[in-house]
Length: 518
Image 1 (cartoon, rainbow, N blue to C red):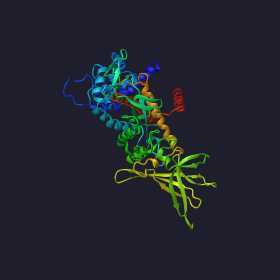
Image 2 (spheres, rainbow, N blue to C red):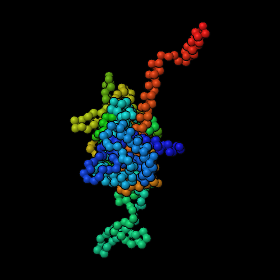
Image 3 (cartoon, helix red, strand yellow):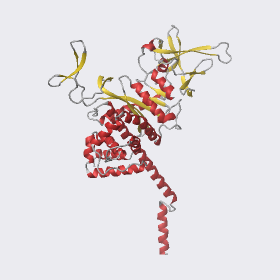
Image 4 (spheres, one colour):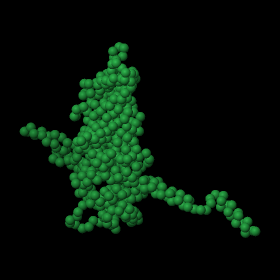
C-alpha cells in the first residue's frame, strides 16, 4: 500500500469516526412529509460531501463507493461511529450514496437560508466542544488578559476563491431613447443575448485582493489551535456579502464563537483588515483583546492629531497624543507633569530636546490589564503603565477604548499588546495557520478553483472542509487518549505483578536447579 493511499484511508476513517459529523447531521435533520424513505440517512450523505474534499471530487467519491469491498468497509465504519456517538439514527443503507443524493441535500437543504442558519448556529457549538476536548478555549485554562495564553486564542482570516467558470463577457447597449441595458455577446456569432450563454456563476463580485481586482467569492473563517500536529479546530465560517466587508463579516461571525466559547477566549488575532473601529467593537461587545497588524501609514483622521516625534531609533515618526499626566511625589513641594503619547501602538513619554524638537524620553512598560463588565452588558478594559518618574515612579491607568462613539483613533493607536510586546509574537504567529487552512482548502478544489456555482454552495464546501479538519483533530485526540489508557493498563499490571524482574528470574531458576540436584 502506498503512503498516499494509506493517508487517504486514515482520513476516511477519521471522517466516519467523527462525533461532530453525527451531531451536526442530527441538527440538520428535517421532517419528511411525503416521498419514499431515503436510501441512506442524512449523516451518510453528509459524510459523502466531506469525502468529496478528501478525494477532491464528488464524482470520484461515487466511483470509489461503487466498489463493494470499499462500501462494506466504510459502511461498517459508519455503523461503529454512529454507535460511539450515541445518536439515535438508522444505520447506513445497503447501497452507497451517489452524487445525486449529495447534490440534492446540498442544493435543497444545506445551501438554503434555513440550512445555512443551522450551520451558522450549530457548527460553532460543536467546534468549541471539540476544542475543549483537546484543552483549548477552556474558561478555567491558563493565561490572563495581562499575559494571554495561546490555548485561549482565536484567530481568523479571509480568503478569495475564484470559480472554475469564467465570468461572461458583457457589454452596455444604449437604445435610441437613451436607456441602457446589459447584453451578452455569443462567443461565436457575437449575437447580443439577454442572458449569458453557457455555464456561469451569477453571484460573482469584484473583490480587490493581492493580485488586484478579480471576480470571485470571499469567505471568512475563525480557528483555534494547539501546539501539536492536527490540533487546529475550525470554529466558524461565513461568506463576505459585499466587497470591503471582510472585517464586519468577521466580527459578526465572532459573535457566534463568543456565544459558544464565552470566557474561554482571551484574545483574538486578525490581519490588517481590522482597524480601530473593529478593535473597539471586539473589546466592547465580546470582552476580548484583539491583535492586528499596525498600519505603516496613517489615515486622514489620524494625521489631524498626529505629531512627528524623534523616536529612540533616531527617526521621525507619527505619534498620537494621550494627554498630560500630573502627580505629586511624596515629600515634593511641587508636582510634576508627564506628556504621554503612542508610537506604533506602544505608550511613550515625550518631551523636548535642547533644540526644542519633540523626542521620546522613555517607553512606559505595560502592567496589568483589567476587564470590567458594565450594567448594560458591555465590557471595558483598563491598562496599567509604569511611568519611570525621576522623583517617584508611579502607575497610570489608560483606557484603549474610543473616546467617542465611532472615533477609531484611540483604539487604532493605543494597542493593549503592541508589536514590541513579548506576548505579541507567540499570539500573532497563530494567524499564519489561517492562511495554511485556506491553502489546503483550495488544494481540495480543481486548479484552486471552486467547482460549485454560487456562494451558498461554495460556503457549504468550506463547511465540509472544516468538518474534515475537525475530524482529523478528533481522530488524533482519540489516538492520544487510547495510547494513554494502554500505558496506564501496562503500568498497573507491572505494579500488581509480584514476580521479580531482571536478574531475579535467573537467581530463582538457579536456586531451583540446586535443590533438584541435592
